[in-house]
Image 1 (cartoon, rainbow, N blue to C red):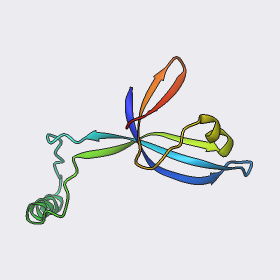
Image 2 (image 1 turned 90 degrees about the vertical axis):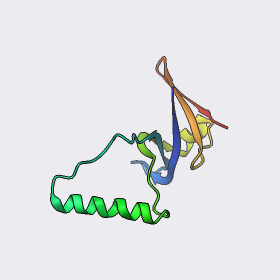
Image 3 (image 1 turned 90 degrees about the horizontal axis):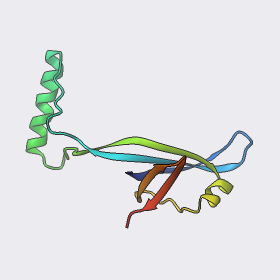
Image 4 (image 1 turned 30 degrees about the vertical axis):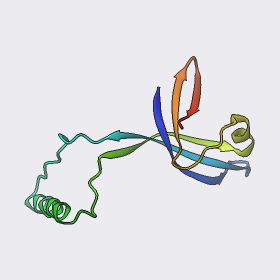
Length: 109
């Protein structure tokens, strides 16, 4: 089981011209503080040093502690979406269970 957040819902058409929805679900993972990018060139190192100095001096530049990784993208016609019997909302979190050839979505309160 894993958790996903609805990142984006878009209107689209399938190959037959039927209206549908594209629903993008992302998994958010914490970024390890031990993950450090070592620049290879002197210019890149200077740019990294400048960004670190700016982040220390200007607290309005947030440091990212999480990264959103695309996990599932659903392309559904309106009829398929209705049969799924889930109302996806942007930023809503779901637990996803993959078991016995099924995918189960459970809304997290």
